[in-house]
Length: 390
Ligand SMILES: Cc1cc2nc3c(=O)[nH]c(=O)nc-3n(C[C@H](O)[C@H](O)[C@H](O)COP(=O)(O)OP(=O)(O)OC[C@H]3O[C@@H](n4cnc5c(N)ncnc54)[C@H](O)[C@@H]3O)c2cc1C
Image (cartoon, rainbow, N blue to C red; front, side):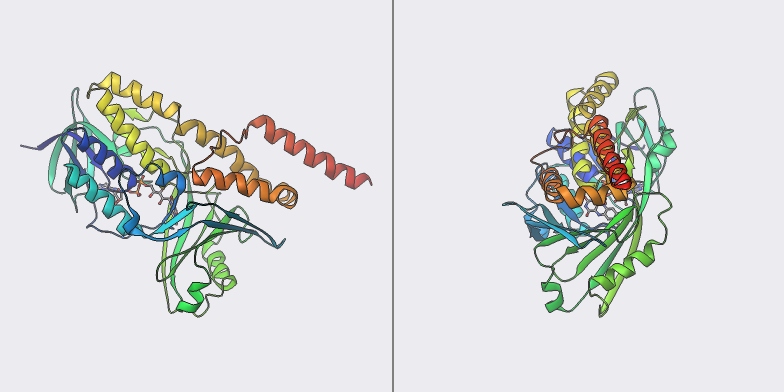
């Protein structure tokens, strides 16, 4: 007999564990299936922005290695630099192995069953249930939450439409002498101009520095060269150890629907990473919770669950991603316009994005609409034209 649950959650990242926690707390029988042995390393900067901290279901302070109330953005080669401060952390630094394991443990304490080293290989949907095939045999549930990340096997096997844009990113864990590490303490650092259509970051951890680069275009050029140049710029030549990792980030969501055949997509599987920063943990947590709320509110009935999940996403994550995409276009597709705006309004722009990261404003609040982008472009072109004639 296959194991049977109300809900099976595939993947134990932030999306999966937050869904499992909420479902277990509501008294449903829920299992989390994870392909790796836990705790596992996850390629990630491990920066949890304030917007993510706000939706954490449990206190995770014990896995935060540094809370950064300062963010700094440098723009090369212009030598512009902007610093923002907030009373509460803008980015809290963690290692994902510990963070994800702590969240999963909370779900387990709430009542979720956890099957590790249990990769889902196939999924089939019946009238009233869904069956997953794993290395340990078949398991059945009324619904599946697909939280299996950017390469989601579940979404592929069930035939969900895609349309996401997956961009490449590198993460290097760099061990440097303590006195040098100290220089990075308490600051989340972001650098533009290190590579053409992306940015670089340096996140201080307790005993090392996490540095990374991402390119917002799919064939992102030579990221390895960019990150080595960045390591030099940061003065990390004397690193005693460098661990190199790379993966993809979905910066454009699927075309939808996000629920089909009793399968709900959450987190990277749905394509919910922030199009401006590539940050994905906050909407992974949020979408996991929204999926769970829909299952509970819809009483595990297909149509009410579908309607509730679609409605909740349409009123929260999806408009934010749309507004963020416009800002991302401006930041990455028009480097000259970006430099011009940074030179004149850099501090204001950084304060606004810091507010979004801190979770006190949204991209929608910034009224970054096609109309405002067009106005900015027109102003820029007029000035350029004026300069040319003069
Ligand atoms: C280089 C890099 C740096 C990043 N830095 C940051 C950052 O600083 N802050 C931030 O917020 N975001 C960052 N992100 C994005 C962030 O890592 C993701 O958006 C986030 O992890 C998505 O969470 P998730 O729960 O949807 O998926 P994941 O965290 O990817 O979790 C998916 C889980 O599913 C498991 N799984 C996969 N397939 C199967 C299967 N077939 N069966 C069973 N289990 C399966 C995986 O092992 C994994 O544990 C970064 C990404 C990259 C690539």
